[in-house]
Length: 183
Image 1 (cartoon, rainbow, N blue to C red):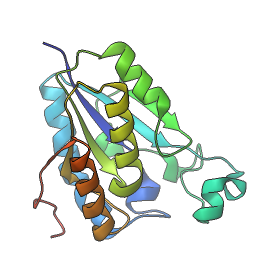
Image 2 (image 1 turned 30 degrees about the vertical axis):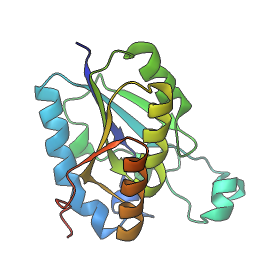
Image 3 (image 1 turned 60 degrees about the vertical axis):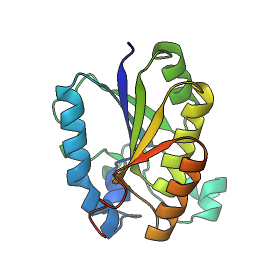
């Protein structure tokens, strides 16, 4: 039987309480910390993504559509919340310059094609979580992929709900529904 994988999407300071932070994002940090600690105790593989932009952000397509500089490489806001990375010095981190990480999908397909389950948590449900969940599903179509709704937050609660429904329609299993701490 293959490994179980936990993918932590963009749990960075700028998305929690920084430039693009929200009350919903702040409220899921404890849930995510518990999920990560349980995953460590269970021997799951933990992989992180980190949204990564540069000083030219405002000239990029994303910057033109979302004119709020965030997650600039090396900045405080670019860092993953330290409570989520404690005792995880060997964790794999993918710096991604767009919503979905092809490198993440390829890494999982190359190294964990026999995974028992791939679970995603993080921010933002309606942008990067859904993008990476669908991308992983494309790379690993016969592997169960799930998203824990109680460990995700969207740009808005409505966007979060819409993304969960879209992922469910694409055979990504949604768990933790109705357990979101802000409801």
